[in-house]
Image 1 (tube, helix red, strand yellow):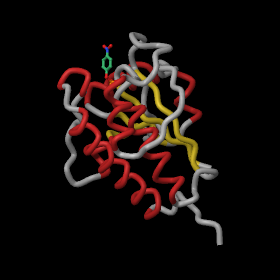
Image 2: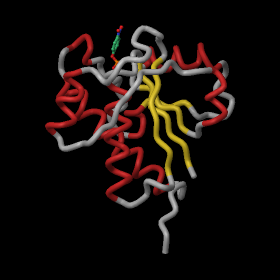
Image 3: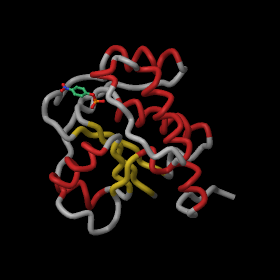
Length: 158
Ligand code: 4NP
């Protein structure tokens, strides 16, 4: 069992989009019982709130299902409970480290670091561009999935 956590600032736009895009990918490969996927924010600003309307609209447009969401802030003790803690931009990475302390087990990554285009995923809360965020997140999730397969972290049933 591997445990993946996506992290953004508010936990209402990018990280829940990543959570449900990645859940959709692993479900299609019948791997949903092998990987636990969740999301958190580094800020407390949106705690308890559902996925932002335009993020939901984009997920629906792409045929990605989602369920009821309550934004949660990342907690220090969760560092030990997850294998991959994946931020969307450099600010997220700094904030993750501020919350959990030193990344002594090298669990903290930036999503597009799994691709050959190692940029930040811009925050659509500020840019208004949910299509760009979706496309970047989709690409990152696809390459994360390929990485986990290549590294032998995902075991298919025979
Ligand atoms: P997210 O976007 O980090 O992609 O969820 C944001 C949502 C809300 C806020 C900031 C970023 N906010 O400050 O309320």
